[in-house]
Length: 384
Image 1 (tube, rainbow, N blue to C red):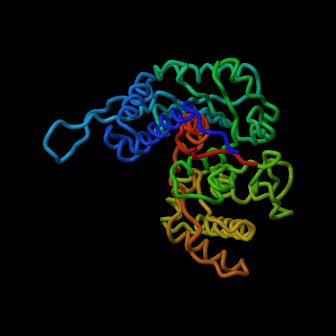
Image 2: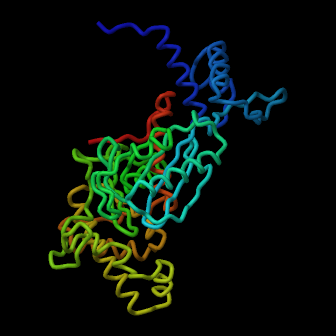
């Protein structure tokens, strides 16, 4: 026989419903809550007062209405009552961003700092993170945590870098950061963070494969609005599938991995993406040929992955803004040459968040965990 719902559970549920409604609607009146949630006026009033006293909501003006008379007081959540920070560690710089409960940027900074896998480097990085957090002028108790990516695979619990061949930081533990920052910290694989940003921007998305096309390619699988990390933490690491056994050597030590075919260097060499695509647009024969080869390689990869996982594919990373509609059509044409089944032009799209996607994404688990505690429907989780 199921146990009865206690008064405490009812009270908690009422508070959660009210906070969640305000969060999603952004600006509501007491009357809006009464009609939408079918709660009594005393219940709504008491919860609004409690949420306001806790610093979670505030009176945000008045609701515009057509009728004559006093306008209703509007309530909104306090977006920065909790904040999360994302830090992306690269070979030559460190990127930092702070976001509020809506995932909106509060501040962003890039610090030029050459990577070194030693105590002095991490001390400098943590000093920069602390300075960045202090400049927000937000009490530390309102900072939920710091997400960190270091161009490597994170362990399932986010406590260490399980594979960090690009920077040579395999085995690095998150304790290095937590001890010097004094806040909860967690590692996350950079493509997984980018995929989380995509989920945040696309509430309608359910299942997809996210392909990050940047300095090094990477990917993430989205399943039922969760990022799949795999049993050992290296889910969707297609970049290390050997595509050309006699090809160039990959940083993993083997030859001909997809990374050697779809990295930024494979496309533009030492040039910038902007300069390369300027040459493509101007009709440079050599640049057009390299782009054609890149698109054929990308189509081959997508075709193989699509045969295994028949879902939508999202093209993200630094390369995403340079894709044109003609490029996408060419991908479909090449895919149809490879796949044995009829393929329609309806499963490839460009990222909705090509900028700051990694730093924002690795901060979002802290935001979603807090929102879930408040009763807001969770958006992102990890799944084996």
